[in-house]
Length: 433
Image 1 (cartoon, rainbow, N blue to C red):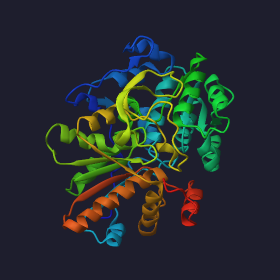
Image 2: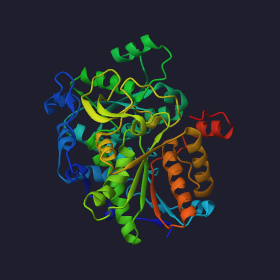
Image 3: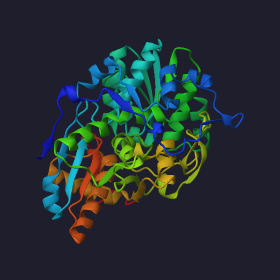
Image 4: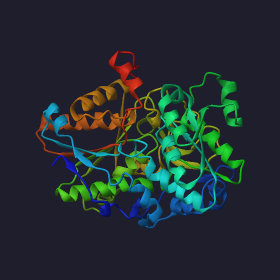
């Protein structure tokens, strides 16, 4: 069977919270003023109470509100697809499956949390949301979601991606979002960076600083984050929960689960429901691989320590793998993975040995993406191409060993608005890093 579908009524009605099953608890976020655990009351300037509760919750299952389910139903459940043509191309005995999140209106997995965050903010009477975006997948998803709840959206888009991906800006503006290239002259954080480097390409850390600063200035404004935080990974678990049901339908279970990892929501969304089976001992041998860019390798080369989530130092301190909050990555085309730190949940799972991580170069991922497009037909986002590259590597290992492993990866977005990067690769103009 090439495509495994779920009926609408089979869409998950609850999110899975891995904090209930971790062998040891996460280290709490710290208040940078005191170095003591952050008082949740202080977070109310940025987030609605419901999201703060989800951030701290250790309940295993959290109900998805009916209003959120109604909007999810526009594109969910998403298909699980067997990459039979890629298997033939690779001449591998492995079975390769991908969960295809690119069918959402925004073209990626990001609306899974954007809709939820917009809903909870609207319930609290919030009229404006500020956020950051790298490649534009998150900014466009939040711009899409807030239209359902009459919320104004201001997006600080990393400058290099703003210039590389003009159609993502247009998409955000079509949904009513206001897009500002970051660093900008409109915030103190942006001015500080521009004074140091007028030609700064920007980073997600800088854009977060600008968005947080603006949110703190107005009572009618909150901040929304597209990755990293516990509640974001929670909302994304609809991906893995659906995939579990789909594998049950064909009486299979993945031996290897792979997803790209910049801040952690892509990987966490697919992997965490399967990691539950590893943690409870029912599937102890499943291998999990988080894939990051070689130019921004927080897991494979970062330090496991407390650090700010933004460049200027406006956020709480989080225990995570980090390259340092002032790290500015090279201007690769996978803008959604250009983040200095990693989700505390994913960081802990990696530190405690439950998952693996690899870093791959930009030129390698585009080769894999083109091979995938020429076999399976879908042009993937550069972020998703990291998963494809690693899935191909795992399938080629099976060709050498003869093992018939089941490989699952998250195809978290399409690349139809990233064609300028493909053009550069196809004509030999793409940097290798």
